[in-house]
Every structure is written in structure tokens, then in C-alpha cells.
Image (cartoon, rainbow, N blue to C red; front, side):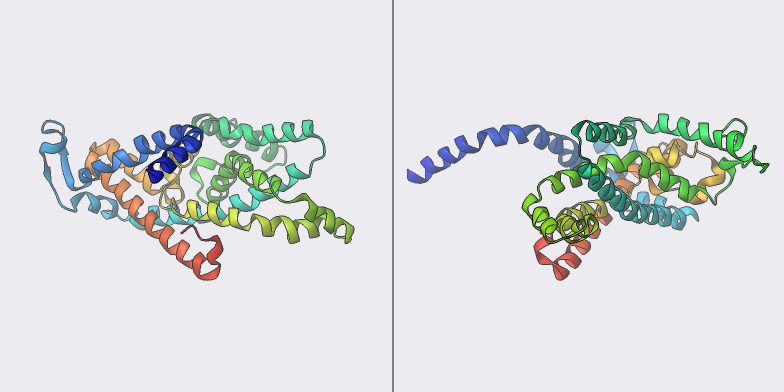
Length: 308
């Protein structure tokens, strides 16, 4: 009886928290867990006439689609390397933005700059693709017409040149996402005990010394957690970034082709649902293994900051 009473009391006490968490839990169930029941589609040759359960089994044939062409190495290389750069550069800039915003004195100024940094994240990749085109168009682009032409430099056909695109992709991704990523770091910085900074000021520490000796060490758990979460999606790419911004230019496939864009183009030609399911299954398994490996490394180096 006492155990039941304790359970009821605990439920009543935690009910408000459960209600707050309910929308997020429902979202995860609908979008992440329930679809896992359909993983078997990756092993079927889907036929619209036969339906989901009536379609023939095909073993690992759908997985061969990902590695059937010479582009397999290119798309895997691009997906991994871009994500590594996004994690490193994005983390550095997000922390820098968070520290700068937290150091601003007046709240009005903080809100103004925070809104300016967050605004790009509200734009769709279609809109950002057209903004990039306004800068990079060979005939009417801002860079060619307003910068290169007055300097007497020959205009560049940006959508035909591979060399600048790794930098363009990284810059556009940084412009869109760095402000949003900085929100978590701002929240972590706000939670740091202010008495530590006051003591540092009394000891004569400069602002940079406070950042490197107080702020960054206290951000370490947050950095590790967000990095581990990002590592789990290293085999995924932002489809809009790699498809809309380069304007689907075939001349740029060598530096913009990723697993997601490759699967999309393949599905547009073959309309094979099983291949798409196989790609998602493959990306999820590899992402899960990457998280396990990364967490194991963190646990060996600093067990207190590991996820599990």
C-alpha cells in the first residue's frame, strides 16, 4: 500500500513536467520511432501494384544502389568532410557569437544583434539559393558586376567552377546556422556563476583571460554533448544546401554531390522506394555507430562528460 501511495504521489508531483514534455515525446514517437517499423522496406523490391507487404524480398540489392557507380566515393567523401568542417567551424563561430552577445551591455542591443543572427535561419533554402544566385550569377551577379568588373577582372562563371564551391558551401551554411546554434551556448553562459567573473576581475584578469579561464571550461560539457549529437548525423547532409544553393549544376557534382542528393536524383530517375529506404537505413546505422565510437572516446578521456 505504501509503495502504491508513493507512486501516486510521485505521479502527481511529476505530472506538470510530463505534460510539458508530452509534445516533444509525441513528436519523437511519430517521426522517429514509429517509422522504424518500416525498415523492412529496405529489403524489398517495392511494387505499387502489390503493396507494401506483397512486394517481393530482394535481400541486399537496394543497398548496392548506393555503391553501384563511380560516384560512391565522391558522395561519401563530400558528406563526411563537409560535416566535419561544419561541426568544427560551426562550433567555433557559434561560441564566438554567444560570447559576444553575452558581453553586450544593453538588453536592447543584445536583442537587436540576436535577431539579426537568427533571421537567416528562418529563411528556406530555396530563398537562400536565390540570394546566392543574385551574388554569383555570371551575367547579373553582384560579385561579377559590382566588384570584379570595376576592377577590370574577367567575370567568373561561378556555377561552372568547382574550386570556390567548398568555401561557398561552408560560408552559406555558417551564415544560416551559426546564429541559431549560438542560442544553446548563450543559455549555458548565462548559467555560469557570476561570482567567478567578479573574483577574476578582483584578481586583475582581463576579458580574454576570463573567456579562456572561466567561460570556455564551463562550456565544455555543452560542447561535447552537441558535438556528439552532430557526429550522429555525419552521414546525413542538408539537402537544401547541396541542391538549391548550387542550383543543381551538373558541373559542380564533384564537390556538391552528397548521399542525400545522390539518392534524390536516383529516385527521380528510377522511382524506387526500396532504394530510398536502404539509404536511410544505411545512414542511420552508420550514424549510430559513429555516436557509440565518439562517446567511447569521450568516456576514455573524460568520463564525466560522456553521454552514457
